[in-house]
Image 1 (cartoon, rainbow, N blue to C red):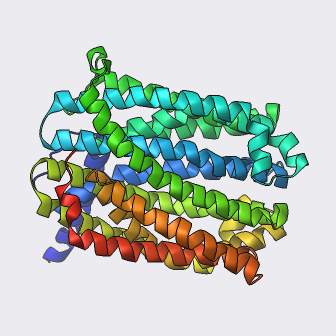
Image 2: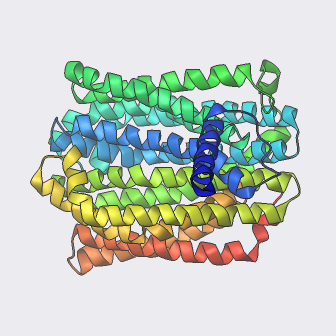
Length: 465
């Protein structure tokens, strides 16, 4: 009876592969099985993104106990804070692409230099954003449509979050460096540590300091994660190790990073600014709609971010295999990751369609807020399979250093299409918040279809980094 032994052998191999993925052991992703490479990179990246999504859920869970205005404050602050995320993601994208390409070329010294120069850029960029955001905290909430009561209650929260945005920037960036080097497990552990601190501190800080305690807890948690990252960057491994000499400015590396960063920034800024407009449109329907929308977005992100982890694996594999002169293997890696992501997102869609009320009820106890959140989940999740594939295609472009293509797609998709459509459906046809949710569904699906056509053309394989 060989079949039970075969099943046991398969299970043992799966467990062994899982442990190997978490170990941080050095791997050469330019050779061997593509499926194995995708799994080894995806497991820690998915777990990393799970922790990022838990950040959002933990905050909204504890803040939701304070009241609707507190939830609205967190949601509106996060909507504007996406500008910081855009800068962080753009720079992390550049670091991932460049470090991955140098890693594929087996050039450890230049990979380390690219990492150090990206940290220099992050420190400079964050200084301006932190200062402006902290100073104009109350004005930011007013601009986003918050009521005077919400501004009064939430300004301190917004000020602390923006003032400590350097930890957001570095956490994103350094994890991008680790991913580019193929050390996805280190990125995972840094976020797990950061999130663990946040979970422990959030209820404690809220008890003593109210809403602003949530901001203090999140900032401290991310700061601990950054310290963990910096320690391991300095300690190093065979792929990358940063020393003080790597921080000396080198114009060719800085210009190369900026070339990818600016389009990467605009790619995410266009996307993020569109989400800000969506939040502003929903805010026209008062605090209940804002709170429901923000609860639904946190839940959506909780399940989207693991899928983003899979797409990050595609970015690393594209960068390293292009660096090794294997464009065919790079393309096959993307197709494999896209297939896995589509299967996962189909499962999530079905989960939302049958269990949205239960999921929303876990983090919110206001019936009016729950009604809006459930409606959002039902509508937006209909396109989840497309979202999953679209994420992989976008990160494939980014991993190749072709950040311009997704940027152009986002300009037309979000600004020329989604915003006018959302305005027309929500206000023109008087569909209210559901019109905004429908616009998100239609836009994201359309963007994926366009991305697939451009991916098939293959110009991304020719980009030099």
